[in-house]
Image (cartoon, rainbow, N blue to C red; front, side):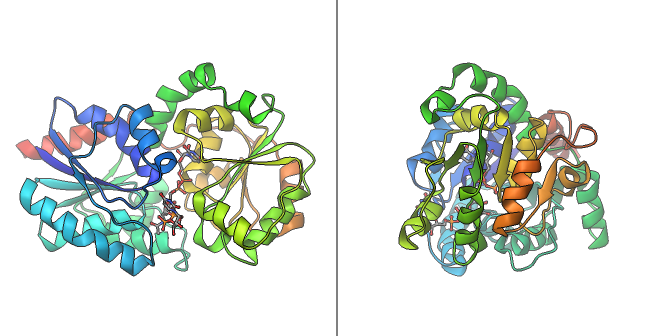
Length: 353
Ligand code: UD1
Ligand code: UDP
């Protein structure tokens, strides 16, 4: 079995780590990095920390409008598919790199396997939602993290090739979070104590412009505890260019590596975020989450009471953060930490089918 894996963004490097490990000795995997994320803190740090092999193919898609960025990836992915002749092209999540990988492979009639299939926020104003729908439509193997993701696919008439395997992010999380708490000095460096701070991430397109970003900052400025705020470069740029002022208790930090972020997230009193991955991680750490969004594709985190959707209203953000507490119960969500093995099993059985 010859697999070409397409990665390009921070969460994809993380998601690929457990699967690359599970495929080692069982399949030939070649990795292509689209270059969508290129700063050291958004890219190389994850290869170093997670022990990932350097990608064989590196494109330089960089930043730009959605169409421009996606288009810049296509010729390089197409060339790699032609050169590598994979049995399957593996794509992760819902970013423009995911879409480009799925599009290039399906046009060459190479089967696509989608890890994190079936997620839906039902909000087509999000660029990611379009990517999810389009990628699932052209995928032959759909690795869903939950029953609700399987139902979403069923509702769109997609039932062939669907496997409910859980979430590869949980695999990474279970393996690395305990090490992170032992080794990371991120809390000391941020000057905070376990359980004594809020952790915040913001990077969604809609939240990094006005009026949303100003409202989020106003909400954070109204909190009464230290706020650790690792800044995605787009958010850092927007705060500066819009002239937004962070209050003294809000500590801007560079983007964290995986281990530092795991240490910060697992020991926060509350997490405020518009990230998809961070909502799940908050749940797995049993840290209450306030989502700076009106909807989520990770609906189970809300249904169990551990995650509240508040959007960008400053008063609602401050109130939800203040009141944040444990949910009603804490059932296991998104698998049992063996999603990568299950995916590798399916991929490697295909070969003998
Ligand atoms: C992208 C994904 C998003 C995912 C996120 C993970 C899409 C449409 N969006 O969002 O789904 O949640 O990655 O983190 O694919 N920039 C830098 N350095 C970098 C990369 C980006 O400074 O290494 C800045 C540039 O100004 C760029 C902006 O961040 O224009 C946005 O980057 P982009 O990759 O387009 O989107 P993300 O917000 O990172
Ligand atoms: N993350 C990180 N450092 C940070 C912020 C997030 O390592 O400063 C990790 C986080 O632990 C999670 C992943 O990045 O595993 C989530 O990625 P992101 O929020 O960029 O994208 P999304 O999940 O929304 O697609």
